[in-house]
Image (tube, rainbow, N blue to C red; front, side, top):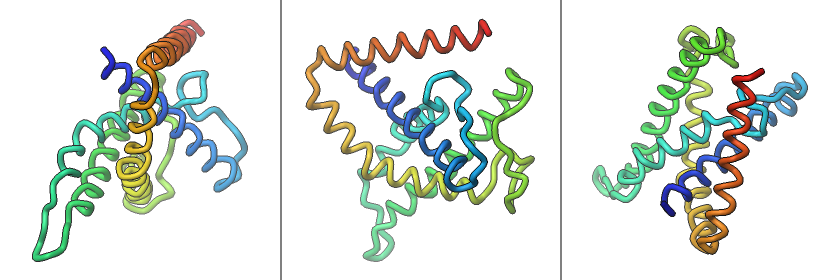
Length: 176
């Protein structure tokens, strides 16, 4: 149960970071003004949380290996490529799920070269690859260390509170 609570904390942490990233792009980079970038009311984009967990579960084993070509360690290159592929597939799937459930998806990449139906594009996929490397090699080890230092009771309380908030948010979404 403790592991499940820890992974839920990771999910929420990366969902919030994803929301901050999306809002930063919209407000500071593109100067479109603020809008809630998540499908839920709260300050989180759950696609980032799901994507982070998928990356943790699918690439942790690869990160531990030392794959070499001659004397060059190519493991980070393989991890980067894995991130790009996985995040692109997750984003594509999310666009279809959102279209089926809401009638639209929340982004449009038609302005980017090498896009597929405006749902995914090379430029954002590479950005997700870079962000994924920062996440897997820097943020996740720090976050794991922080969670390990938390008392078990604190993990239980924080994850329970966040789960209640998330459930209330999901219920609100379906009732509105």
